[in-house]
Image (tube, rainbow, N blue to C red; front, side, top):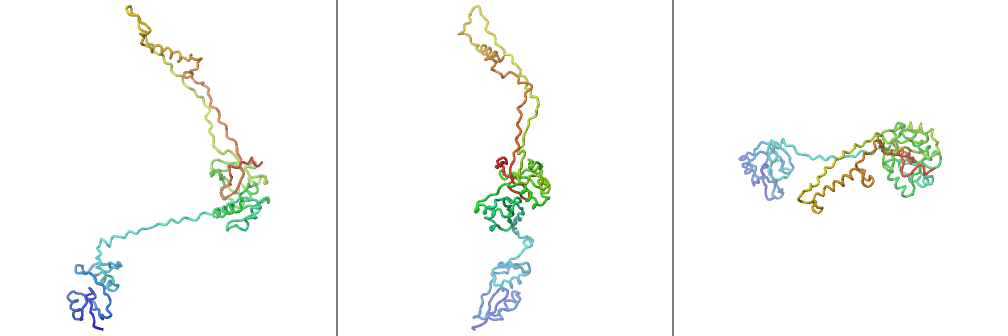
Length: 357
């Protein structure tokens, strides 16, 4: 070892003797223990810029890590120990009151979709193909009349169902009344049931159930509970296809009021006088300039409706008791049922019920 080095702990000034370091610290009012290092083991000392202009008391922070201290000495000790360089930053009252703006990123968490069950009827041979390929939430039942299978699925397994339809090439078939009743018994009896047309992607209501048919209502808010539908449909013939029928569009009937057309006011043309004969000058045809007189004569004949056997009907009034042609009411149309859900009986208005019988 060649010698020792004595270091002021406040500003990092180095001295070769302890006496010189004490004198330096007493002159500047620096406090603390003198740091002694050997020249061979000398470590890099953090040097700070001149702090003579900074007040000793005050709120300071480190320029590197934003560490705060209530005195200049305290922040310098921190910078020396951590090896941070630079000049301590004096924090004013305005800076202390100012709040840092923190950007808040709101993450929108989508709620989990509500589970809704659905049921469709497929052929028995199609049920044999897919019985070992069903995912969780899909169940295969035998239909009440043993003429097919009822496939139970949910809105969470629609993608899997589409894949099965594509791979095994099958589709749902028409349900009979017994199938619809069996599916409704699995649904909550208090659920309001309506009609859903998957061809038009439109919802309808249920007016009533009578004569082996569910009557549609154009107001989708008019529904019946699943329990009431079961009671009504148990009176239906269970073998025949389930049917949804009724009027599927609104009609407008114009009011039957008398329509009268007011008579037009007839205008009397003002005829111009022919020029009077003069004793001195004879009026010849080639000298006659008032040809409007001839035009008025033509208009008078035409205005009275006498020309061309009364072809000009513009001045004649319309019949007083005129009645518009009545609008024909739309016919009742019927469609088979292709499925049942927790909220709807599913139909497809592309397929008419009359095509099956």
